[in-house]
Length: 379
Picture 1 (cartoon, rainbow, N blue to C red):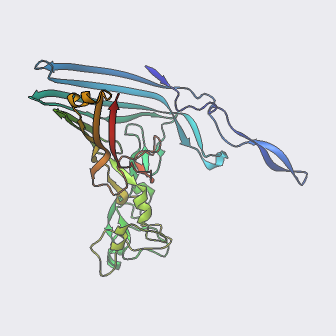
Picture 2 (cartoon, rainbow, N blue to C red):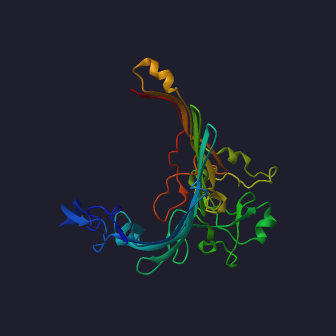
Picture 3 (cartoon, rainbow, N blue to C red):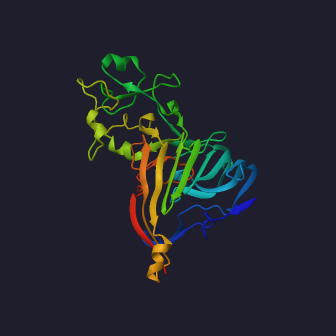
């Protein structure tokens, strides 16, 4: 059992006071002070309790080895910010508190094999693990927490995507008449998105939203390979994950169909002559087509060549003639060389913003691709 205070500030338990606030006194402005934020005076460390069961095995004179591990990790009193009503009068409209308890379970597998054939030596290692998340507690009342296109509820995963389900685009007036009523300034028209009436009320409302996917990858994996032949050496590392969804906020902003820049996909918008499309008509002051829905959710699965390197070491017999240089190696290496993914954003491996807004890509800086040429010199 371990404690964690890394997300706890020095004075997060104390409310802030603004000492330069004006107020009316005897029909004149007077200088005063007021509390401008709400704080939890009982704020405390997070606690994580971990249980593991593992097996290590080596075969063929340790040429082949592997580890299988099952982990069960429960984190209690997780420190995070929760939204509070505007009527409280706090700024910001959040409170930092011990708001949640989570459980993570999974299986991790690591395999390693090394061998040789004459002057050729090689080593292959691979690892993979699964992750299952469940929310055990949320605050004192277990009320759901809504984030950026997400909903976190007890008994489900943290930060699950939550929104409307699209059913295509209205093609004509008859299509609109047969469908549930949808709010729109100026009324719904052909070319607008249609949403599924999940509760059967005949009107599309917030209650028609549903869970749209997990933001937590179900499977993580990696492959590391290194080899040498005489004075040459080669190594590379692949890594990735699968099974998660991403709320592509950048793509949603570029598909708004209003003023400003747009994604190239926006060129395929609906017209009476272009009906075989999933892009609605461009509309200023739109309140229908821009609703958060499965339209802006994309797969976050990817496979990446994280790094690769090839090198050549000058033989010691050659260096011995110099009487000065002990070792000399030339190499060419690269980072983030190749990414295989269907994700339309800059990078599927982006920084996730907080506990409840997982999977929301708001335009984080993409990982750069780096090519390096180097010399390792020993004297």
